[in-house]
Image (cartoon, rainbow, N blue to C red; front, side):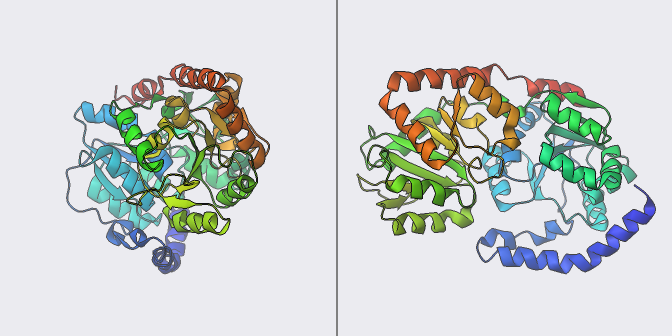
Length: 418
């Protein structure tokens, strides 16, 4: 990137930085974790040995996507630094890796802060997960000769149009990359059309999800708790719901035949919405409880999943999973996780974040599409009424995930880390 751009961008950040810090403080009113580790947001990282690999995983989805990649590198005794942007991402990283890696927030994108961060850390190679392109980061990495890779890369048609509007800046950022490992040919084509070079199609790392041996035991304990000790009670999950989706599903459930047939477990994606979702269910007249309650009475109708790091446990014994993000127009959340544990998936109309995975899951018989929230509940009821059909779809879901594994190995080879 030209020197004049770095200078201008740095100057803009001088004025924007107080606003960025105020925004963190303001968000901390709902989630106090936003008010922690501010020194890291300003480029301070403490004293640690330089990492062999630095991975940037913005939030929860990217944290889970990098898991198999990071765990393979850990098994090779590589020193890892993993950065994130959100408190939920940080919590997910800590749950996944404990103290086996260094975990930090990535600084704000001011070039002088990124330069300070890289002076302290001195990574040998940098891996950005999915679509994390920022002018300051790209510019400073290029200036310092750091090999910067975009891995598990995805770019929806909608996002590509946005990047195309700033084509000059987009080309400059893409030119800073050593290469791109795209999830699908469609994603690769969009990056190439914007000017990217050295683009490879390697598949989606999320398909390489490893199901821990203890998961089923943990899921059974959770089921016993959620159902008030009546573990035979069927339940379905609305997983990683986005803003507005809880209302859509709960309003549809009020007078739907599914009510009374199965317990509804609503798991909002962001902790800030846990209390809102609980109050909404209560106002609509449901008998409602929280996952965190010490005891849950039998006969409860709605449970709000107010816990982190337990999504697979929620999914493992669910009769079906209604996928969050697909009804609120936000492109959908990770449908691969429920498929991996054999939970039939119900998708709404918005799947652009996982378009190929969603289309292939539907074609494979691992997922079903619903036009709206009420139809989604009807599909769940169909699974409850026909257990043999539900089991066939569950088996196809596992087969779908197994057929798409291998992206981790291919990615490590591309990065020269195999």
